[in-house]
Image (cartoon, rainbow, N blue to C red):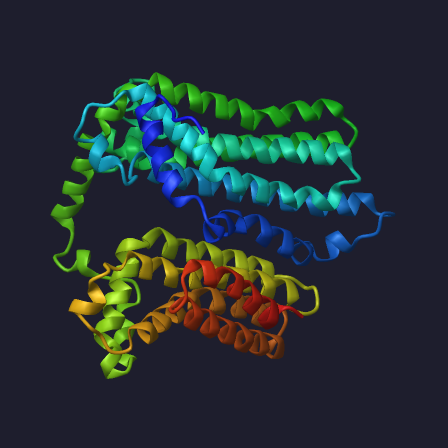
Length: 435
């Protein structure tokens, strides 16, 4: 494999060459594809089970799922690109040193495409039930691919363009309506992810309307499938036209953070998610449990934030009149496996000297307790949805099964490296939630 000439791409290449190999890395990278393929029959439920004699019902079920997946994919990518461009780990270098702006943007786009590749494949898996309907497969692939491309390129382009848009007279009325007490430049950067998601969402909904019109007998509707791709092209154009505004982003971020720090309570920066639960832990584990909560919140805040999105997905899956809770349990088990993966990740980030210099009682058990606490949002969301839709008996039994799966995953994740955790987590989910 030849090394890229772009210096920023070369950094990505070297990082990837160290981290992207091995069974655990490959399994973790493609785990979303396997998870979607396994959960697809249960998520679609009766819509997938519809007979060939009812193609309209099958089309409706698949198209409804594809649209939801497209919106979810665009939302995730919009937030991910914000972290990549504005809050990424390389900002400490980019903000302080001269860079080749266009080369940097090009490298960020390539890195975003490579990192989000498995997500696109996982999204396309949702089209498998309609393989006998080529028109729906092509339209769905265009919709999902467009949502993926628009989420990436608009996410990067709008964030890069935000500082320069703030000084243009045409956008001033919009920013003045949204910015509140924030200056225009700050408001533009703060609202950039929402703006990218809004434009992408409109493009997806327009493409969906076109597919529905085409399915109803108007082939011209397929032309609207190009709307997300048009939004993606505009995002790429904005990224390169405004690449020089990279120099403005650090100053605007500094203003935002200094303003927030001025009004922030003294103890706000020390608050940690679920830290208040430490008081009920066994006395000998409390110091280590507190350290784990802080380590997780400050080192994996994005991962923990995603657990709330996972809880919403689990609740939506459980919000069904279909008898039983099989599909929601399977999806919830896979989501809990993702929470359990925090164990290997956090232990990998612990300094090697920590256990020797600061020995702690119950280090692994404290990490297990933290994982169980972090997973409760998913368990409770799924159980609450089942309680409303399926009744007390189904909800209680499902809650007990998910709690047992979570405890086992927490114990395993706190002790095994990622290479051992991934296959064992799949086995635990299969045994614990498969009906």
